[in-house]
Length: 429
Ligand code: AMP
Ligand code: GLY
Image 1: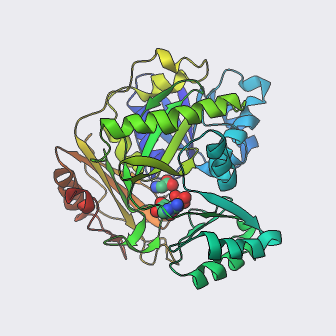
Image 2: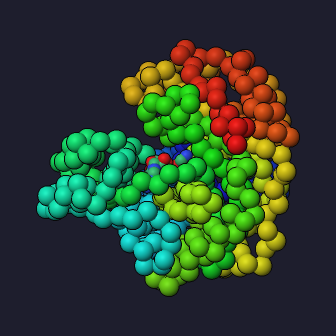
């Protein structure tokens, strides 16, 4: 069977690597892909929102399985578009419809959804430019520092601001409603601040049942010790040590099941991944955010730990028979991912620098997934802020990290930057 993976990051490379291990998959098209070259994979120069061209490719190449990596095409309705084509009725698609993708596409929708279905999350109110004055008095009277302000729409991971003072929070609200994030910030959600440790829980759902995937923790800040600007993610560790059976049971009872039942009861067709961004507040899980896709770089760690054939589960979505599948087995080992970035990221950075040291055989427990790279005649060059994800497995977090950092010593490009403290907070728990 031929598959198509839509997207160009490390998440898509890790998904391609994992499904490529399956005997069921013969060819994997990556649209548009990046400089990574994995077995069975071929890049096609089609962008993630070129729906017509994607549909044409599926027909031409007789693709049977489509996995949508990033949120933008999902929020723009790629699944609805493909489902509406009578010639594609045979297609297996991993990804929710536009209505389902609203869980990520609109923070206000997500908050109201959680409220309707009794799913634990921080208290909130939302405001627009018409209700700015109300918003400012809400900040003054109802909230306390630190303040949490979120642009309603997709803002490439930059739409959440956490000011420490009321003055900053007021200024931020005015700027957001004044157009700082464009249309994404036309509505601003103000949330109460939750204190705890974050973790990510992933499921694959067919809209009725779900399958838990390995948990992971992401490292969002650019600087060591979780300092500096937010990024797309600088590293990941899977599993998360504090996510024990008791905690995951609470997550399933209070969050995962009500979410899937809620989607079903609202008539929303959701067959794909759900990423629950959670805060563990003194042992109780709260939803910080939903994403309608897998996380990046979490996927680069999570895929290493899945023992079974993920393709079988993906093919169960269409007929909603996921409940008949065996749960996915996980390797007991720990997986870690260290992300390398371009100098300057997440602010302005340069690209086009040659990358050396990528050669050498990949093993199951040590992979270099390309994130922002491009393949040129002279070789692979940097082409994004986040460049490579070095993922490795070991019996302990430290052993996995040692492998990744050791491998990294042989990889070079101008301005290579990475955090040296991925996972260190978990070692202290
Ligand atoms: P989000 O894009 O919603 O994941 O938010 C980005 C980051 O902001 C999260 O990973 C958290 O670290 C932080 N954050 C978001 N909402 C809250 C909240 N209610 N309380 C504390 N931190 C939050
Ligand atoms: N690593 C966080 C995300 O993918 O949104």
